[in-house]
Image (cartoon, rainbow, N blue to C red; front, top):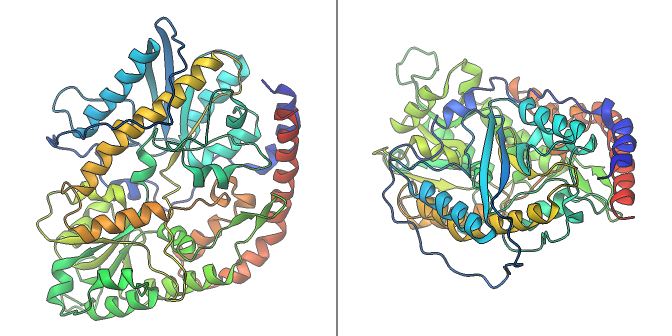
Length: 499
């Protein structure tokens, strides 16, 4: 355990971090929007897919004589999915996959997997891990914590460098290499994701469109072909939205009883910024964290989306003080053409009779090389482990085994549920979901939140302000100062972990 690193890094960075984050105007609304059940609700009788062997996994031959392996499953959202909890009664395909995955690991290593849940707050999981680190106890072997808690935990030295765990091979295909690359700073990595969880997959930001309304409005374009041809842009979104919007009640007062081109909520602005290929924070050639928020492409995407939001052809139901249910009803009743949501949104529409399809976030221009998909960072959680030297062989072995068997069981079950008719109803949408998964990117700016500059996107969007560039410049010095401290701190961490 690197306790000298704890003193160095905590001193440098403690003043920079504000653990209490208020990224959403109404923190309950996004969760209500996407449903209160995260396992698909009603029993899913779809047969679990067969497992396939991958040549990359090699059982090391160690067993642990019935030892308990404890996982802390945290989540800022009260309905965070627990990848270790299965329901024996009315089991869904995911329940069956979790049971198969857990059992495979338990039997192979002679361990008992247990979990502790702490959901509905950001600070709860952090407090538990900080307490464990301070007291030096062995409460949790593995943890999943909210996105915004990751860097505060890392910079207080509470987390173990994953690259330094002997026997944990993060190059294996069940770990997310994009995440590993984006969040490795100065050769240290304190949190990641991969097949070990499907909750991060559920948080991918996507666009749903009402196919019945699209048809009745007389649109003749093949919208999927637009995506394939790289012509699905914010200009095209604005064009469609304008044609659909209607004062249904005829009272010259547009509200949630009327019809709109676009349904949206506050945090979609984060996905818009990322959809242009822009990042709040990037790494330069020296591996230093660098502020890149004032990127021309990203700002232009923000401006186009804000123009749509303020045009009268879109409605931000959070700004109407609404829960998610009226917005869900609007889409189901064909009073909204496009619904900006998460993959978890599908839980609300599995019984919807109206036909719908799935699209990626638009491009800024047709010349943009590719689409880019991001996560709802408010909801997302990531894997980490405490900076204490106990049961290190077991931790490495079980993490690898959980990653491998999750890829064989859990990921396959989730893909089966999403892509084989339970939620997605046409082959074009299946193709879109694969495109989104392949184009998923991570922005360290949402983990580090230097001087909270990331929140300026949402603060401005809430008021439909277009002053992004000037606001970012106002905050630049404070954000760059924070990043300089991060770079110094991570350099110290790297030296400590790699001595």
